[in-house]
Image (cartoon, rainbow, N blue to C red; front, side, top):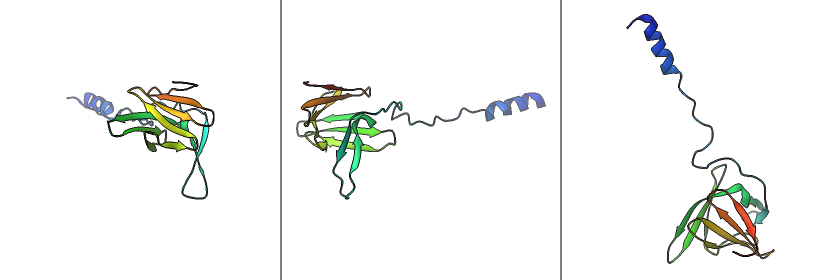
Length: 125
C-alpha cells in the first residue's frame, strides 16, 4: 500500500455521518397547538397539559383492564387506564387497535387520537 492510498483510506474512515438529533422512537416533531386542559396537581400550582403535545405510542387491552401510553417531544410519558380522567373533564372512554377515544365532558364531544399523531373532534364516535 502506497503512502497516498493509505492517506485516502484514513480520510474515508474519519468521515462518519453524524447521529440525528431527534429521537427516532418519538417520531416527527409536528406537535402543534390545540386544546389546553388543566389537570389537578399535588402542589398548589396547576400543571397545564395540552393533549395535542402528546402522541399515542401504545395500547394494551385485556379482559380485566386496558391502558394507553402517550409520549411528548421531551420523552415524558403518561399511562392512562380505561375510564381514567386525564385532566378536568377529559376522560379516556374507549380504545381499539388503532385509536384512543376521549370524552370532553364540558362540550359533550369526543377527541379521537390515532398512531399517526392525528386528533379529530367529533360529536359521536
